[in-house]
Length: 412
Image (cartoon, rainbow, N blue to C red; front, top):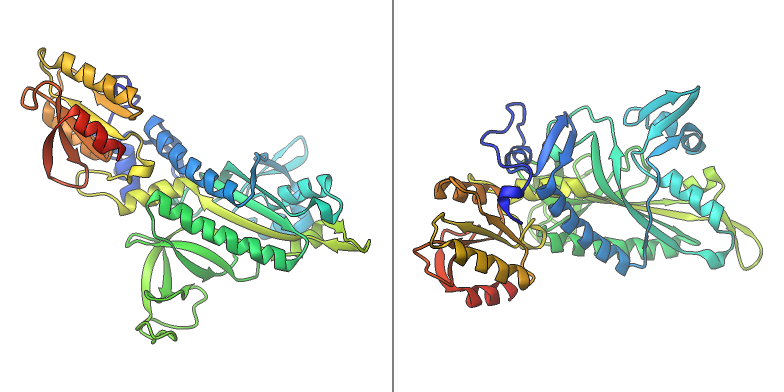
């Protein structure tokens, strides 16, 4: 990809009303555009990061036996009335009325999934069913001031599972828990599983996947050497109390929630009459699980954690490109950079080539640091023909390599 063709370019300053680090760098780097508070466009660079994250999530969800679907965003009032959440979730739902009929924009899909199940299943042989989708969510957030960490419109991955017993639900719940931890590890995050309240979703205890971050809005009490962690909203222990497992005192820390998992049991199934026929011929209500990952929130979290005073430092697995190729403008070296760009592309390396003319080397380097691609390769008279200067985004060290050496290093 030639940078001269990329839409849009970087900007020098973020809007003054943006206070979150993720918003400032993503806006300046050309990853997102702000329509209004809590509503952003993913621009080409941002979309590339989202696609990398989405594919990792998809691979891990498929491993659990789940199948991908896509459910509607516009829901009738009637289906939300079946569970009582039309009124219970009033504060977070966007509602509208048209031709004397009332609708809501989706903030979750439990009811829609259960409606699918009751239409397309009947006996125990049809279960379990595990389905997920990536879709836009709408929530009426009072505090939409954290960039893409807390939006009124955002992208999520929702997974739903339906089972014939609590035992089978519990087994899959644990499987998804492990799949989530693997997912977050692959995108470059270390997540802590914390007990939490269910909010408008359920009265039961749930689990959140929290990432330690000084700019996070949530807080947890946790044991750094063990498995104990609770959201402070439900914690019955305090910071400094000795861990029961002998791992030292409990800690309190700010975190960002990147995922959550819920066990609803038969509560929603009973309200919506979602049942099946057992082997004995007896009617039995189904057991529902719900599991979410905030995709755009993950992007924001990565920026909050991986940046410096120059810009973003993307983990390799989710970076928009593998290499940022910078040409120090010169007539003599132009054929060199064209050849190197072709060799990289032909080798399957995803390259952003800064081919802009009449732009200083300093400006190109500053943009490369802001955008945050893991590896920067420079072509200039100084490097010589067939050679590049290699620099990792997270290091000040540079080295000059033959192109063949650089290719080998990129593929290692």
